[in-house]
Image 1 (cartoon, helix red, strand yellow):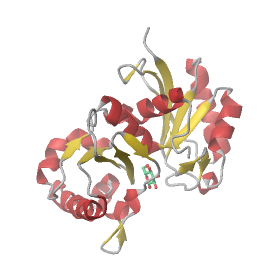
Image 2 (cartoon, helix red, strand yellow; image 1 turned 90 degrees about the vertical axis):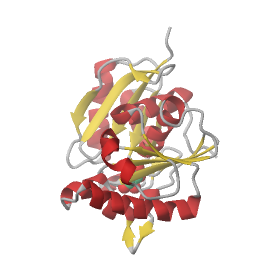
Image 3 (cartoon, rainbow, N blue to C red; image 1 turned 180 degrees about the horizontal axis):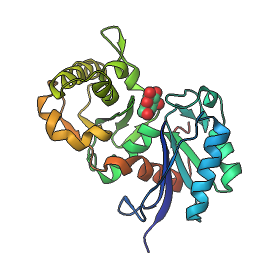
Image 4 (tube, rainbow, N blue to C red; image 1 turned 45 degrees about the horizontal axis):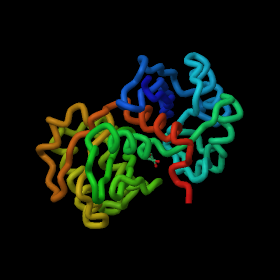
Length: 252
Ligand code: BGC
């Protein structure tokens, strides 16, 4: 029988969850998406998560990804979710409400775990960086396959700006940039990143990885850049894997 888990990916606009086959890194059922309650305060989001969990009644532990720095289950930042998350013990809140053992981790870290195990990073050692280009820019850093959690490379300063305010995928839409204009900004960002971290591989994730053919060939940086393979299920799969392993990704 397949090793099963349950993963939930919480974003600013939607909460997505599904049971996951952890041998293959695939969803075992179509993912369920419910709109993120507004305001997205911890109590309302936790109630929505509980409703989602009740729809599937998973029997094992659950992994939940949030767009926050997470240390020992506590959220320390809040991007695209209500600031009330800062200082919230998310792991305890979700465990109490769902009645399941819950592991909470950063959303990009979850996507990175999934890509390293089942996607574009499989078998890749050395320094690997996964970046998710979406509303913001999320990052996950791996050294020989081991996650270094909570890197937050989306907030690197590039030419006096927070990188995600210049090069997130949402900025392309907001400012009506062409693929060429937006990719120029991503190249500039990657050159700053690679001068600091010297990765062996960069995995480009987030919704825009679906259009990788439009922009990856235009990139001008020295590191090999490949598109993510799991697309929009990466956060769910990685969260489920972390939940199954039953440990916080940042345990000291
Ligand atoms: C947050 C990260 C998050 C990323 C993607 C950034 O703004 O600081 O924690 O991983 O957005 O959601």
